[in-house]
Length: 274
Ligand code: ADP
Image (cartoon, rainbow, N blue to C red):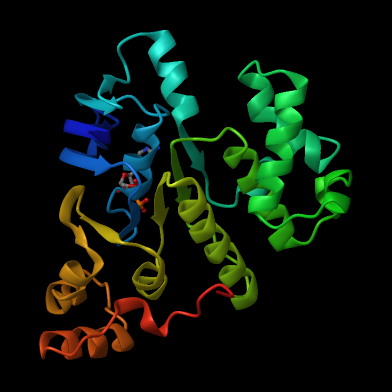
């Protein structure tokens, strides 16, 4: 059973005005539980618009979205439930930190869910651990953390809601290479440990090649490809035409695999200490 399914999902901004624009157009997709999907496409291809539909932040102009095969827009109760099931981490999420302490900030989502204090405490500790924040960070003001730590605290706030689907929009934007690596490794661990579905919107084809199992390529408001990383990246020429350059190293590995060498795509990935 797909965790997310869309039927004819279309979103038109400024409908009926001269600025009318279909940002996603007739999207039919099934996302299976447990997949790690990289979402890629040129600026303006519709990535943000699409992912905002997955947790009901935007309402489709037409078409439907099903979460666990239930119509997201069926009624208010369903919408609320789906919003807890699908956690969305925006770009630069640290700008939304606002509580006195990191712990309170991470607890904000679980508290909204009406959980007990005991449960909230447990979830804050668990989420902090996933993103590599230590206990000493939890009682600090979020504004006293480093840039990378702030970002991780904001991600923890979504993880603490234990979403079935975690969607992150460019979670490494603006971080240095070390900070990027740390966050991506933590997201991969989160995926491995929980078995939950992860959607990672990224500009980096290299990051997608290293971390995702499947790739969703959007172009001009539509799905261009949705398949395993190897299958999608073997269309290097078409991707280049969309302004998406397949990393050289990936091309080499795909070439070797095509010639029958037993290569593993992620063989050049630094494994997380295992
Ligand atoms: P991406 O995330 O791939 O950059 P977006 O979903 O942000 O793409 O945008 C898709 C298209 O919709 C673009 O042409 C963009 O200009 C337009 N768009 C996005 N948000 C709005 C909005 N709030 N109002 C009007 N047009 C928008």
